[in-house]
Amino acid sequence: MISITESAQEYLAELLAKQDCEGIGVRIFILDAGTPQAETCISYCRPGEEKPTDEKKPCAGFSAWVDQPSIPFLEDAVVDFARDSMGGQLTIKAPNSRLPRIGEDSSIEDRVNYILYNEINPGLAAHGGHVTLEEIFEENIAVLRFGGGCQGCGMVDVTLKDGVESALLSQIPQLKEVRDITDHSYRENAYYR
Image 1 (cartoon, rainbow, N blue to C red):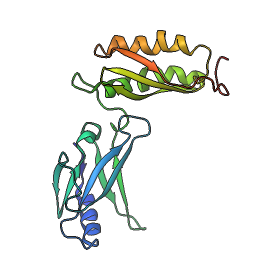
Image 2: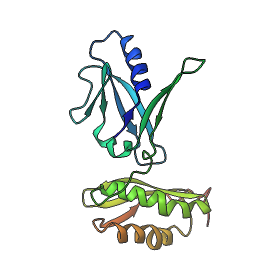
Image 3: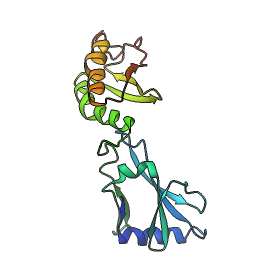
Image 4: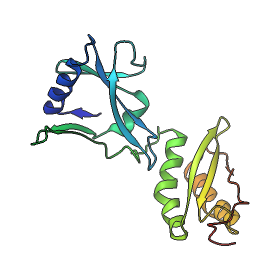
């Protein structure tokens, strides 16, 4: 779980005291968790704005509410504050926000993203391409979207069937099917035309 250093707690408590709202705290969450675009955020959390599933983390002078789905991505995360001549800077380091530690109990979505970003995309990057997970249907069907050099590529069917689908189905037995929803009629950046 995320840790908030003593200096960060002092800084946040001072900041919250200026908000003129009794019981105000902070909420910590990750936008686009488990993807390269992941962004760790801290926002004000007025009483009643926390979600019922949030985990409460008592701090010196306030409460921090941690978004439950973000918790696995916040493992080893640290919120710190370093004073300097300009006042100081609050930093959040969340090394697992973009690629969580995957285990047997991880969701299918987390496992698909892990394989795409660790195994598939590094190979596609050589051709200027990438693939992302759009959604998982209830029937455990992964819907993917290709981009960059893969969008409109003449070899995308081979890449999908022999590469991406093969890797995903062999490593995630619960996954039933992989579908591509990319508009391949757009060929401007295609690696093979």
